[in-house]
Length: 206
Image (cartoon, rainbow, N blue to C red):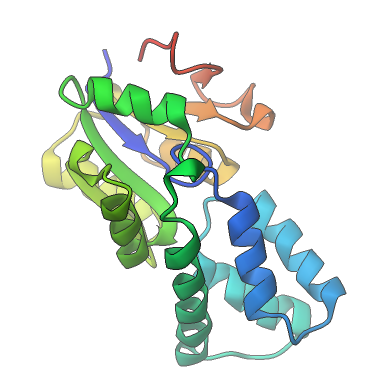
């Protein structure tokens, strides 16, 4: 029986992909659109990866230029400013997920483990009035694999009673690496991965 649920944020709790697409286009608007499109394709394919990885990918892989940590942080800060402004609108929340979380947060140990920036994530969940439903909220620059491992160790959770709900292959990899259950959601490419696919939170039993 599942006792602990680790939630991805983007695509599971909030519909943010289009807004995050726009954010990357905006911070790189002075560059060639063809390269931006390639970045967006990488971003969509790797939803669970942090913006730090994606910014570095844009420079090192697509532009063939080196970028130091300070440069990555500068672009990440610009991106975060845009996200804090746009993603605090409650209309972006995935209502069936939020309803499930509200109705069940006392029955499970709920945590957020996300590829989004941790400070931004905590700001957004507070502004959206959903932070109170989670024991803790964690994000990048720490990798999702590490976030999951750290939570299991800190709270002494049993992997056999722990699941991660996510919408990307990176979420699946983080669950697999930590030997916990993986439930896919909001991405039919995950139908044959993991232990369960959630079609609708109104009818799901964890």
